[in-house]
Length: 168
Ligand SMILES: CC(C)(COP(=O)(O)OP(=O)(O)OC[C@H]1O[C@@H](n2cnc3c(N)ncnc32)[C@H](O)[C@@H]1OP(=O)(O)O)[C@@H](O)C(=O)NCCC(=O)NCCS
Image 1 (cartoon, rainbow, N blue to C red):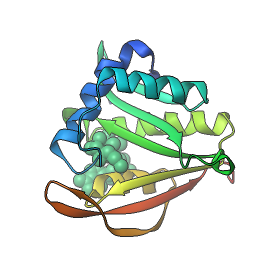
Image 2: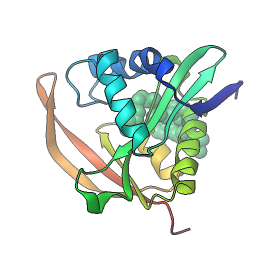
Image 3: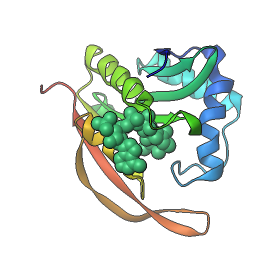
């Protein structure tokens, strides 16, 4: 692997984070958002996640942000506080060389050290590479929600995957 550095995201990273993530909103079913996020919307989200203690990471190669991995509340009700939804997305040309493993491992390490209990990923299907990454890092397949989303003129199913963060 090349010299990829994973670090905490800062507010200054927001345009680059949006550049990476918005591609998947515009060009794929990976994200179920239908409109790209503005920097202002991402900043508001960032501040809310950071204030509540959810890790937000970026992978950098030189000055360029080539991947983002973040966590946020699984569900808004308070009893879900120990559970997070986890996400990892790389710039298209950054895939297939271990960066996803490096970045997502760092996110899970941060979640563990911050005392979170469960991580959940919702993977829009098909996405064999993402399922492989989640399996590799210990997530188990909980089930498939059939046709739960509608994007680009068709329904999409999602795979729900779960990781026990504190049962090792
Ligand atoms: C999913 C993603 C984060 C994976 O990151 P990556 O850097 O490409 O993954 P890695 O190189 O670390 O490989 C992880 C595992 O996936 C497996 N894998 C790689 N390509 C695969 C493919 N096409 N099909 C199935 N498995 C694959 C490898 O076996 C690897 O495990 P190994 O290292 O033990 O061999 C990245 O490809 C990506 O950003 N994809 C688009 C966005 C996305 O789908 N994000 C997930 C949203 S739920």
